[in-house]
Length: 471
Image 1 (cartoon, one colour):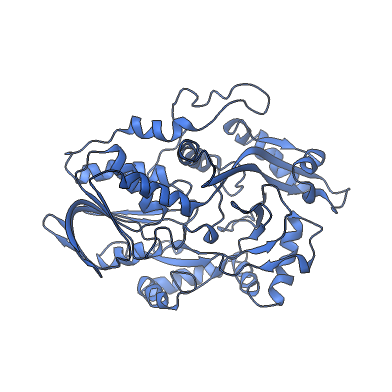
Image 2 (cartoon, one colour; image 1 turned 60 degrees about the vertical axis):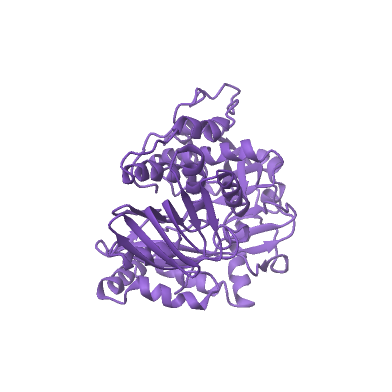
């Protein structure tokens, strides 16, 4: 197998697949290839069991500032519009209620301030504050068995998207493969990428590919490949493995808890599985692991390759993990995976969402959870939250922790513009057609008070913070 392409995309997760869809359908780039090392598309972190199945808009994610929520919102609407257009039978997603729950005076006050004073009520017209009685109507188990004297408030919207990102990834590839200029190669592992005068030569287990430009969207491995080419020397990874606990039918939709201050990881939440509402998932936990892929010992060597075993990396880890909030959190999460002890320690987090749950009601989910690479800036010796993008000479490296899947199409749109610059302006991107195929299908309708949501109802962008970094 060998070939010459204008563009080669490395990685068949949702990040690479969304870029393939965008460039294949809405540009006139002459030839495009997607290379995936697994035998199937979306086999690792994009698989439905390996992520939270949440489409993040920024409305119930209390670790988001208003500015970040403004930016994430458009990305989520792009993907939601795609799902509305291509998934009428709901094979890739479901729409259910979602809320962030505040329990006790302090949390209730925090949610009220967030909604009324910080601008989230204005930014998300369908989001509304609901009290104990309304919470009980939407999610009975959240109220059942809870102390009636404890104050409760939730910010809730009926438009929660629960997404099978694996099926969505495959849909992107299927759409792109309809074009005659697209080739998709699975079971093809990259062994080396070498710059040439005209672009890059990509050596794989199945042959050689030559291209004018390339995008590496290989999750944690993206930084590994970047470093081999001399990029990203000031970055290392802090791989975090997320796990879930399962219970029987307890929730109708998604119920998030408030984010702990200073913690970069997702707050524990409960939700019904995208394809089986009778299964309720609680999590994720966040365990630090010295590996780039969950359950694959072979990637320990890859982690060490990215880590570099140098003073800057060790000092950065020490500075981050010495934090008085983060260190106890990391240690607690190690315990959650210990048989018998782990479920007992995790139970209070479940009971914060569903108070009546007992120990026998939950079990650790085997085969659930992926690795999310948190980026560490070794110059600042700190976590660099959100996605990382390294742009080099005719090459882009995408490292996409949460909410990378939610903003995959927005990221693809940005990368497409960059790729056209790489290719000397020989090709064009029909962004209007791209938006017509995606965000223009996002249903806006009426707001919580019955008025029409005019925000971008005419097709205008809602993104008030279109910067170079997603989050």
